[in-house]
Structures are given as C-alpha cells and as structure tokens.
Image (cartoon, rainbow, N blue to C red; front, side, top):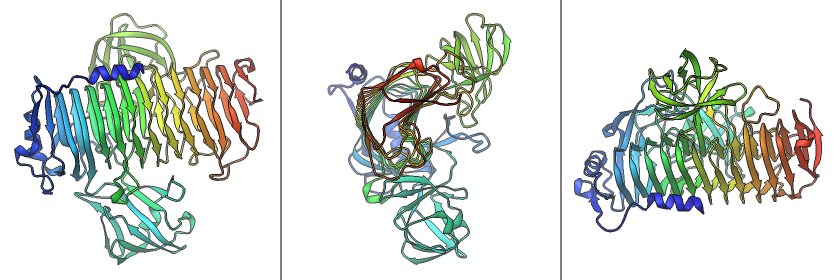
Length: 605
C-alpha cells in the first residue's frame, strides 16, 4: 500500500482544468494515411511548453514513422553494444521528447508503426511525463520468423511470417528489411504446443538450397538431421547487434506509462538509465495477435540501469522476449589508478556498457573488493568527470582508505531504486524472468511466471562478468505462481536463484541479506526449487510445491534446495506434493545456520 501512495502522489500533477491541448492533426498529419508523420509530430512536440500542463493528443488511427526523417542523437546506452560492434553511438529516434515537463502524450488507442531500425521514442531529461493509450509496432520487425510445416532429415517446408521479408537468389535464402540485410544470426526456436523456447541455429539453412513453392512458403533442401526440428515449431532469427533500443528514458523523473503496448522492439527493449520514479501500469510487451508473430522484443523487455526513487511495475504482461523481461541493476566500475589520497580513476569493464556518466557530485559510493564482492568502505564525491568514453576521474571529500587497491570496484549507492513488481504475467522467454540487484526494498508479489527457460527470478551481483551491481538487503517474494520454469538450464534449473558472483568466499561475510520467499505456489516437473549462495537471513516458508508431469526430470535426483556459504537460513512450514521427500544440500557453512525439518545433505566444500 505504501508504494501505491508514494507513486500516486508523484503522478497527480495533471488536472483537468487549465490543460493546454495540442492535436497533432493540426500540423498536417492525417491518421491512416500511411505517410510519414515524423516531421509533423516533431513540430507538434516543439509546441509543448514546460510552463503549463500540456496534452499532446493523437486522434485514434494509424501513424507511420520512417527512420529517414528521424531525429539523430548521440547516446551511450547501458548493456547495448561494444565499441567494436558499433563504433558510432548515433541513434535514430522516431519521437524525441527532450527537456520536457508536465506533459501527457495520449495516443487514444492509436497504432504507431515504425519503418527501419530506430528507437521508437525517447524521454531525455524530462519531468512529470505520462505516456498512455498507445500501440507500437514495426512494419518489418528486425526479427524474422518461420514455422515448420514439413520436416525430414533432408527437407523442410516452412511458412514465412507475413511481416518477415525474404528473397531467394541462386537458390540461397536471404532475410532483409527496410534499409538492412541480415548477415549474422542468433536463433531461438519456439514450440507452441509446450509454450517453450530454446536456443537453436540458422546454420543448416545457410548451407541449404531454397525455392519458393507458394506465397510465403519455402522448401529448403539440406542436412537437418542433428537439429531435431519438428512440424509446428517457429524458428525466430535476428542479427545479435544491439545497435538501437526499443525506447529510452534518460535522466528523467516522475515518468508514467499506462496502457502502452510494445508489440515489437528492436535492440534492448525499454531502457531506463539514471532516471527516478518510474511507473509502468498495464504495459504489454507482446505481439499483436493478428500479426501471427511470437516474438515481441529483440532482447529484454524493460531494463533499468542506475535508477533511483520508486520503480513500480504493475498489471503488465511480457510475452515473447529474446532475453530477460525485467532487469534492474547498477554498474560496477573498476579502480585502475589511485592518483592521490582523495581521487580515483575508474573504468567501465563490460564492453557493452560505457560512455555514460555513472557518478555525479554529491553521490555516495561504495568501495568493493571485487573477488569478494565485499563493501569495505563508503565515500562521498566532491566531483566526478567523464574523461573519455571508458574512464571517469572521481574526487572524494575525504581521504580514501589505505586498503583500497587497484582492481577493486566502486558502486553508486545514491542511484539505487526501490522496486515493486505486482500483478504481472511473464512468459514466452528462453532466459530468466526477473533479474534484480538493488539495496533498497524489493517486493515481488501476485505475479505469474509461466515456463521461463531459466530461473524465474535471479538475484546475482558481480564484478567480473556483466559488472551489474549490487547487493540486496530487503527482498520479499510473496504470493506468486511459478509454473514449470527452468527447462532450458538443467541441471542447475532452480526456479529461484540467489547467486552473487563472489569468487572468493569470506568466512562469516554474506553478500546478500534478508530475503523472504513466502506463500508462493511452485509447480515443478524437475527437482530443483531454490539455490542460494552467500546470503544471510533467508526465509522460505508457507509455500506450496506441486509436482507436474510437464516433462520428465532433466537429470538425476538433485537436492531441491542448494545452500552455500549462508547464515540464518529458515526453510519450514511448506506444503510439498512431490513423488519424493525434498532434501537440502549445504556447503561452506555450519549446519547450525540452517533450520529445517527436511533432510540435510552436506556437500564437499
């Protein structure tokens, strides 16, 4: 309830009285004309003034936006592309809202259709913005899809989705789009009979001969024996390069999305970067039913990097992502030089996250021993400067501790959000459901996780791979339903995984704290339920675990609970309807740290 009150107070800045209404059709736009509305909408946006509450209204209809007339902006965006993959960070933006305040953008149920690779909309340094009642899609998604109709070891007949353009030249098959061709391939196969997605390959089709046998129907001749394709499966294919993102919220605050459908997004998804107080209500990342497509997002659905304040995600549905539906994290930067007793030079370490200011004057930062993921001190910044795209120079208001060394990392504690995710449904992804690493309170309740390929929820924290920070201190996972998750990640296919990447364990020190998993329903076909590492104060109680015959177990008998290097673990008062009595394995810890009525199985440390 407290989250609702806070969010409601943040967004009650619009009243019916005195609103300046701007109708986009007054700028030469005609709905359902299929002509490019980009330039005219830009003029309408320019008329939105910050000194009064404004409604930018799109009368219901279809509006088309072409990349040729899009705004060009230079953006470094977290978790997207490396310098080698994409040297230029110039992005094409369909609808750019820059330095805008007190604005409601109302589509009135309209469909916005985008042409070419681009970011659909951007909120850059904006405040008090509502985006509502809009459907967003692409004329030609950068995802290609085809469904197998006939399969043998040497022949496949496939129906190409109506939105996936292709051509055949000299019996070779090529995907192409509006201003682009596809030369690199990342493939995931979807089985509609099971609602599952698995990694696959486009390689056999690269080597095959192709002919068109009917409209959007192609026969491939090649060697398909080892791929186990079956009729009815849909193969989804994209170029792995994240050169754009679906939408971008940058250095903005008090942002609300309501009744917004993202039917396809090219790139990472909706990226929220260093923004504050974000409310997603009834946001649907899923294909339009009439499209016949199965994929809605090129990668993640909603991604939060370095945000703060309140993040509230409610009444949303995410179906058909090529990566994680929700990811909330900060970024560890590594210490590469200690110029003075009060200054540090730090560096972005993952090649796909760099170029943006990750620290600001006045921020509180944590000093972290990287291998241990141990916070050993904190400090306040008196200045922060991005000296090149990979490095920042930070000045502290007090001398740095003597045990700080090159190779340690720092985390921005000021830019960490509280998070509530409730009444949502996540399905149709071959990866995880929710990733979260934030020290502020986290509440995940009343959600359904349906057949996620990997962990439904992952709490990580690392300073060695993606460098996604940081620790969690207060997490409640309550009253959710987990149905048959983890089929794509056996044998470690735990429904919930709390796995900080601390490669050096410190006796008595835990990375994460205070995680409560209570009153949930787990429907499991395999043994693994929960794996936990380096966590103090874990409670797993009041949960119901039901056996499912969705598929056979994907390995030999394994402990349902795997506990490593933890303190104060409580597993009790749960209801198990399983063929065998569940067990708990433990390692790198004392048996006295676990209280449970289940059988305990010590493992080698």
